[in-house]
Length: 67
Length: 264
Image 1 (cartoon, rainbow over the protein chains, first blue to last red):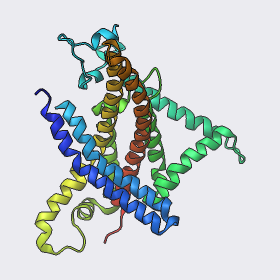
Image 2: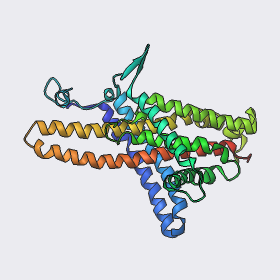
Image 3: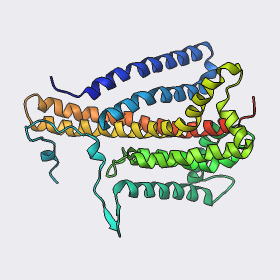
Image 4: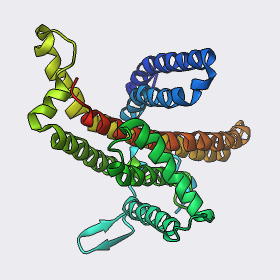
């Protein structure tokens, strides 16, 4: 079986950020559902949280190629 | 240059794109220095951003024309969303030139990955991103030291509030590592890795589609399908480019606001 161990590592590394982003957007949807006027303010926080959680998955795939 | 031939490995398999596709040959040389395409794109982006804002701000009429209105909307987005809301209404004005220039410079460089003919994100070259992150590091640390003094600033960044003194030997090195050493690295790595991965995805779908189309059979269906997916991925990449530029500027604003924060 051919392939690269890096990609298995990336697959495992993407579990955490996947769960994290799901939690972040679940909280965002809950917040907007309870108080629709807060959508603008919550959106900035949701985008920030998404980018921070996604960073780890992206670092994973970049290093999977580079190393 | 025969693109189709370069996709096929010696044993007939597909030559998947890797980090080597980012090593572009020099366009021309000035003395001993090779000038490559990413370097030219960086200069081009700086010139374009400057030209846009200069042209938008020249007339300064009370009733703005279209270009001035576009410039005002663009500046207003950064001023309100990033400056006033994050840094606070007291001292955000002196950071506005830096944040505006940073946001639009990073955005244009990211968009170069999708603009035809150019099609190369300059921040997929890691060195360029680390230079920007280094500048950010100097700015937010410098501003903090200027306001609080060197020891006061270190105390602000490394000593967490409301924690008993017993935990301090564990928390202070951790906070120092996290706030002062690791921040520029993650800032740069986030932008670099996003642009790197996005470009590899686009190249993979495009060249993979061509390889599939050449090698017949199911490839006549799978190849054009790969190209359709390449268009879809390109749209996703546009979203990612906007998002990463916004998050880079947003995190800069948050670090500056954290450095300027009052004592607990």
